Amino acid sequence: MLAFSQALSLSLLHPYFFKGMVEPFYTALSEQFQLIIVDHYDDVAESINNVSPDIIMIDPGPAVMRSELPNPEVLQQCMLPKVIYTTLDAHYHSHQEIIEFAEKIVPDAIFSHDFYHDFYPAKWHKKLFYIPNSYNHMLFRNRNLPKDIVCGFYGAGFFDGQNYPWRKRIAARVVPEFPSYILPRPTGLRDHGIVGENFVKVMNRTQFIFGCTSVKDIPVKKLFEIPACGGLLMVNDSVVLGQLGFKDGVNCCVVDSHNVLQRIRFYLDAPDEYNKVVHAGQMLVEEFHQSAHRRHILNWFKAWKRKERIGRVEQSSWLGEFQVRMPDESSIGGLFAETDIGKTLKAARNNWAVGSYVEAGKFYADISQHCPLLAESSIGYVASLIYQGKFETAAAFIEKYARLMRHRNSSVINLQLLTYALLLKLFGYTSSEADEFFANHALWDFNVNVDLNSVIQRLGISVDESCFSYTNTELAESTFTEHIQILVDQAKSHLSQDT
Image 1 (cartoon, rainbow, N blue to C red):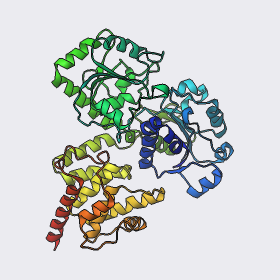
Image 2 (image 1 turned 180 degrees about the vertical axis):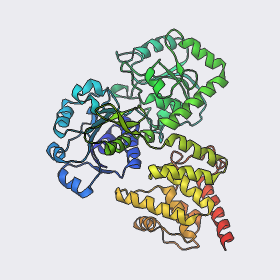
Image 3 (image 1 turned 180 degrees about the horizontal axis):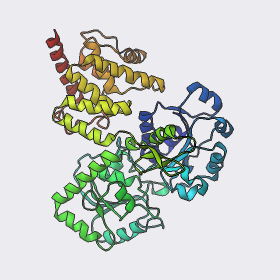
Image 4 (image 1 turned 30 degrees about the vertical axis):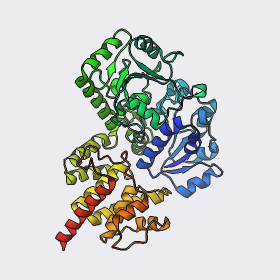
């Protein structure tokens, strides 16, 4: 995929957008495609010729970070499939120029997180596809902090405005009756500075957090971030949320002004029931609503490649299934969707937790077939291979991973995988791509007797729990260095058996 986008660079000035939407979206996209991003549009034709992409994406960005647009005439002449991706966040209405730009390039599809049917002309509605919001699992996660805040009202609309009538009704009922912590959206004079990790900690400390689907009935990011942080999502009744897996009393709490006080009281008096619902909510979003689960553009592209000239691609579900529809309304090719990565990851983690590394490795390998750069599956697969003594296979996988990273012009390879590459080299299994990366960054001049701990210290390795979680495994109390030492012991054991 060749992406014409300035979103990553420009959104750095707007952390709310960068951390919440832009960075996780492009990270997920890079795990699904070999992604090349061009943020200068001096010669669009040259960029296309140099990359020779299978698909082109144009991201005009939301109005809050309005970016330039590439030459539409060149894109119009290009016969490759072209898609527009735009956040179209309702708080920052996009400009008419996007519509005018789209009229010129004639895109094959337009993807949006927000109110596209209210924005684009009706004649394009069959080209419009919805990507539900998701959450950045690298940031929002359960830290298991003591819950010393009872009710949390975080964001806009609880005390003013017209876009969130449910929020105003709920706040009016709850705030006078229960201890409440209020944080408006941190903009302008209301910029309280509680953002990023500090905001995640506040969410983790809160028992009941309120969010809704607004007057447009769409799932905003906060509806996924709340369960991810271990809070009980208090939300309005919504058909849309039901389609995304939310169920009242099972993984969330549906309330309105007539029953919200009673529902809060019930869960305060029934902590076991509270914990059960909170846990189910966290499992739901971890399994289905991280950014990596939004494979809509990839699945659309698979369907587009299969459609005949007179057919069209239509969206079958909000979770990203597509099918080809013919003029007689028959469908061909079935549903186009990736392997259910959420369920497969869950199966891999469950096997890892009980020490079934061979089985865990099979699940991680299955994921890597579809998303070869997904960090957790790559790390889990290589680690499982080392546990099994399959060093040559592990080294070959790292070689392939590093080669893919080089093709997408990435200067950074996952440090855990590099550490595994180092471990494998210590035992005689090399990966030239990883070697080249180490050499280019002067990270080693090693021999077989090198001290592992000093190398790890030299690399500055620190385990990224968001990439591969040891939380529910026998390694829960281990540091990353101890984890590597376990792998060393396993490797020595297998080598001695071979000898």
